[in-house]
Image 1 (spheres, each protein chain N blue to C red):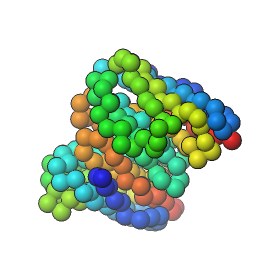
Image 2: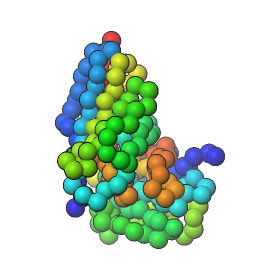
Image 3: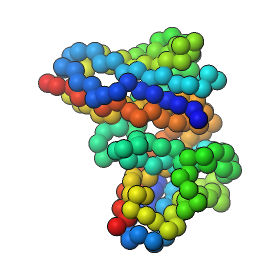
Image 4: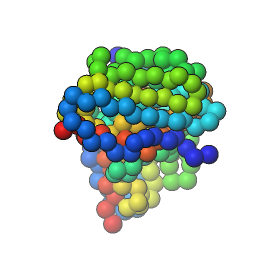
Length: 112
Length: 107
């Protein structure tokens, strides 16, 4: 298996632009997690899905952030409009049931 | 809000010593506990998982769990410079992480 796939790996955009991050989980995994990592705040859980259904989105910073999982093999995290404080590394991770979680390589987002 | 706290770092140990990393959690119903290692610029990777009270050993790594005290730790024996990384603790089904402890092993 190719592991968790994220795209793009790097994104540089200007404040106010829409940003869409993409994730393909490992085949057969039924849970998907989106995290944001910064030096100041560490690894923050934004939202997670079980069987494509959002279970906990309490970590989503504000209404500018939205996440979808239209099917078992694809998820998106969208920021609209983006702000400089959104600059971070965004990780997607997946797992099967309560087993260990596998992380993707991350997307490094820079908002100018 | 469920909390996961890790001992503040950074932690520095000499090569060959034992490194001790600690984690406490607030959600008493937590059942799953994980230690991840993250090298600079890389994504976290799983080192150990533990589900029952007591010790679990895997090579130079030992995870210890005490559910009554809501405490989980990771011991690294015979520390090597290649162990230098940030270690992250994660608990329960929603996989919230602690802030991480940066470990440096000095040759």
